[in-house]
Image 1 (cartoon, rainbow, N blue to C red):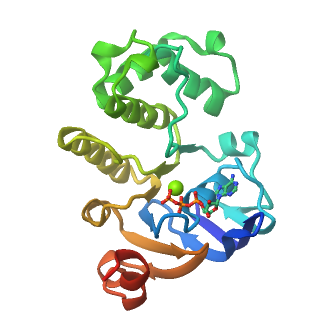
Image 2: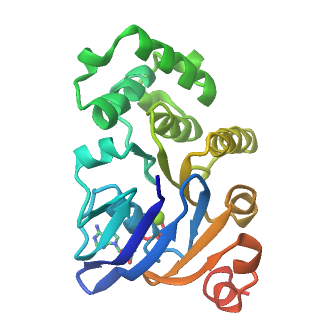
Length: 243
Ligand SMILES: Nc1ncnc2c1ncn2[C@@H]1O[C@H](COP(=O)(O)OP(=O)(O)OP(=O)(O)O)[C@@H](O)[C@H]1O
Ligand SMILES: [Mg+2]
């Protein structure tokens, strides 16, 4: 299995070139940090890779296949899970059902009722334990705190039997203890040799996770390589770190 190769990918919104003729490689079985200033196109790139948006031009190569755009069935076949920067919870459903829904929507294509079997129950219990929400499983998502909602959003990705995890700012707004929890969970994914792409603004955290960094600026590649080298790069420091 190869990683993900992005070839000349472009997405324009009105006058904004959110992703601009971008060509990058994301290594299989490694953690890639996707960084860059606000509005540099990081989330748009994830939306293109997961088919939420269609590229204006360019291609996405995953494994041995090349796609002009990704549809929901392809996403399931390629076993890609993601989290959303702003969360995609259903407020009026319980924690349990939000997790089961993630399997229904992203993995089986079946309804919530069809998938609620014993093996699903096991996966559910395991995921709840991982994200520390077992005691809150019957609560409606809307009753959770901000941090608990972020953990549930991550749980929705973790419960999927995915090969590729795309995580859009999973640490933002978390308390120290929750950050440690999320760090451990992502480390677990790394140890299982999953392909991980993580968007994160905190360089201390990204250095702990990422094997490699890709830096975007105005939808274009500014730099890529090992975190130590990239973060010392002058243009990265000017564009992003403000030093
Ligand atoms: N659906 C949309 N419609 C119009 N413009 C959009 C849309 N999505 C993104 N943009 C614009 O595209 C550019 C890239 O946005 P994107 O959300 O990908 O940035 P980002 O790197 O994820 O930023 P942040 O770090 O703030 O999350 C921005 O100028 C943004 O305003
Ligand atoms: Mg974003």
